[in-house]
Amino acid sequence: MYLDYYQLTKEPFYITPDPEFLFLSESHKQAMANTVYGIGMKKGLMVIYGDVGVGKTMVAQALLAKSDREYLKTIYIDNADITFLELLQAISRQFGLTTTDNISEMITELRQFLLDEDKADRTVALFIDNAHSMPVETLDNLVVLSNLETKEKKLLQIVLLGQPKLETLLNKNELRHIKQRVAIRTTITPLSPDESLSYVQHRLEKAGARDTSAFTKSALKRILREAKGIPRVINVLCDNALVTAFGRQTKSVTSEAANEAITDLMGSKQHAYFKKYLRWQTGAMAAVMCLCVVLLIAFRSGYFSPIYSQKEVSIESNLQAANTSTSFTVSNQSAVPQTNPQSEQDKALQENVPEQSNTARLKEKEVPQSPPKNTISKTDIMASKTQVDPQTAPKSVLLQTKIERGKRMVKVKVRQGDSFIMLIKDFYGRTDKGLLAFVKSKNSHIQDFHNLRQGTTLFFPSASDIP
Image (cartoon, rainbow, N blue to C red; front, side):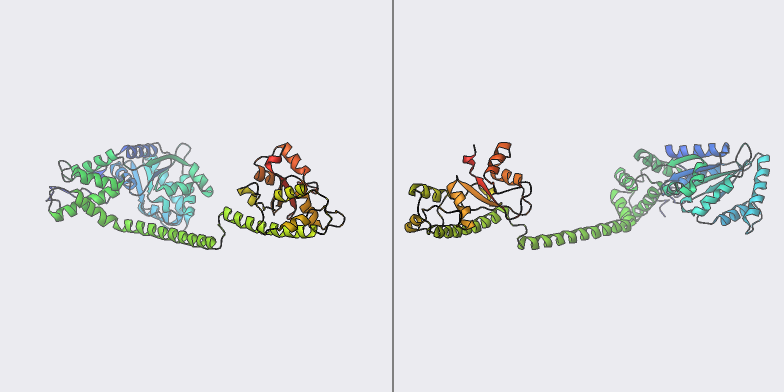
């Protein structure tokens, strides 16, 4: 279509392997040299690895084309997805031997044929392409062909060509005897950027072009970047870019023509990629939305309410409970004869601090000594100036009296999960031995400070009263 327009004698980027267009990169040279050496020295089993489109088949076809048929007989199997019986039948047909359903008979006849060829100084080589698709059972039975040998050499040279999956197959435990028989391994790698450019120039020259003027530098750079060093992809993109440029009637393939060709050929692949990406993105967004709903429900239920708000509620409820307790204590004390001086009782009432919860002490270590909301009349204060009799007073009155007669203290009720050390640390900000001993001395009603029960009341002296 575009040959005359771009002054070419043949299609430069035909995708069918053609030994005339063979381009030898460093890895291709290494693969060919190793294979020629292995066949010439009759090493037996050889393997050539390579990804899709790097040129494994081209190497095999070039070896077959350049071989001296007088001294080298070759068989090429391009469909490896066959049974061992089918493989033997294919080999026998190409050598003109009898084909039966009896594997033993065909092996015997093949062995005699190989011995005759060896006596005539001829080598027999079997190339199996796409060996990565060969069933494990067939690979396992290749040992039968590999064992066709004399004391000095192998009678049949076997070359397996396959993708990296072939190496994975050979690493299977049941195929370890095959892997151990591999004499030569080589890998064909993608072309480097410089090798890719040389590859395009080589193909154009073989097609009759004097240079690479059929492509602009930007177009060629775009194509090679997309091809990533895979010769087959380079062929496809360059061929379609020439068709696109010919349709536009441009003297050279421009970057626009190259982009159009890439979009036309890689569109389905890109579409599949974006479809997969969007599917993943949609799933991620759904997960985020579910998380947001859960967090919203948790916030509305108060699960994540600020701790200080909870502290304030706890302080307010404890203050109200303390005011009620104070009124009850004063009313009970009014029935006891007055023995204490007024100044001492007034000081005790002023220094009395209501009970605090564990969370309240984190916000402020001491409750301000403001008078309770429920005001006490002067007559009640005078009536409360009595000494409580421990034998007859209620337990709540004795507890309150302990606070009033001692120094300034704060009542703390133990909650679930609290420990004595943790409470001291939260209240005073330190946990030295002297402090622990002093606080323990003020809580003689506690028998085991290492195992505080929920609801137990502790008395914490004011920080200013700590010696």
